[in-house]
Amino acid sequence: MADTHSKKILLIIGGGIAAFKSLDLIRRLRERGHTVTPVLTKAATEFVTPLSVSALAGEKVYQHLFDLNDEAEMGHIELSRAADLVVVAPATADLMGKMAAGLANDLASTLLMATDKRVLIAPSMNVRMWDHPATQRNLATLLEDGILTSGPNEGDMACGEFGFGRMAEPMEIVGAIEAAVNDGPLKGKHILVTSGPTHEPIDPVRYIANRSSGAQGAAIAQALLGLGARVTFVSGPADVPAPMGVDLVAVETAAEMLAAVESAKDVDAGIFAAAVADWRVASASDEKIKKDGNGLPVLEFAENPDILAKVCASSTRPKLVVGFAAETQNVIENATAKRKRKGCDWIVANDVSPATGIMGGSENDVTLITADGAEDWPRMGKDQVSQKLAEKIAEALS
Ligand code: CTP
Image (cartoon, rainbow, N blue to C red; front, side, top):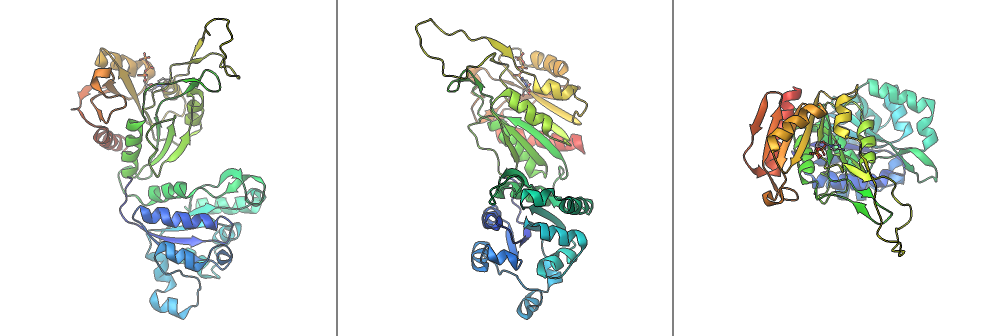
């Protein structure tokens, strides 16, 4: 689990169709040990009821600015400051406009003006409203004010249109919230992790793959989250689920993995734990290959791009790049040569001969190769390897 130190979230639910997703957001946040104090705008009550919100949050719901009962219990100034983070989800065009203009004419907008805590918004609106110059102007103002955002995503909308404006999924918002509230040496750092195998299609039903489970990559992402990093997790089809709280980009092939890696922006460190297929079938068939009596099919291969080497050579190379070397012989020699050839800072080398039980297993026996030489780590759980590596990464980025 990521850092589950309990945090206090003041959740302002705006009046948009995505308000129903905020119920799930409350549930997810509580599952992870956080407390949620909900605030509903007047419009939000058209979409979700105070009763359902309060039942899920296990807390009183605040709705009115001049409610004497509320003020007697907790004044709006105190309410706005008792939280570790203020979250607005869904953040409607109206709420964003109020925030950008500094209006304070209801409880939600007053709390947003009165708070001394950071604010994260999850915008949600129709694509045209999102694209409208007024919204984009308000967004620019809010970003300049240091407001954090999660989404919006591109996709189908409740109104039948397609485009940007769909509220981020609850787990994406949880990830953004935890990245904002986690205290740790990697707070404010953005780390990219590749993980899992890639699948290279032969035809629509068959593919070439490898035995990587994705366990090491997932454990590294988890450890990095725990130290406060924001993690973009680019994963091939792994056996192990992606840790909660990462920004997950699910891919299948090496080409897709490369595209996902190249589109990640402002990355402080890249950790390339994926077992990328070195080759793909040169011309995968669009139709299922049949036993047609003409003999055995012959597969021609083409070399896949070396994602790690490309990133190392790029003009946007992260400050720290860590590769992995899966070897079955002359581990240190091969990995040392690989570090130089690919241009990365460190290589985590391991022996993946079947007898070691490492590939697909829960333990790892690694040697860290840096410019200073080889450092042998004792055999330990993949979680411990990850923790140790995450701490070293934090040191290198500090
Ligand atoms: N890697 C990559 N893209 C590829 C192949 C590998 O990004 N197309 C990365 C892996 O994620 C890993 C490192 O390169 O961090 C080394 O992978 P490995 O499979 O050990 O090395 P190869 O490049 O395949 O070299 P060789 O086949 O000679 O062992």
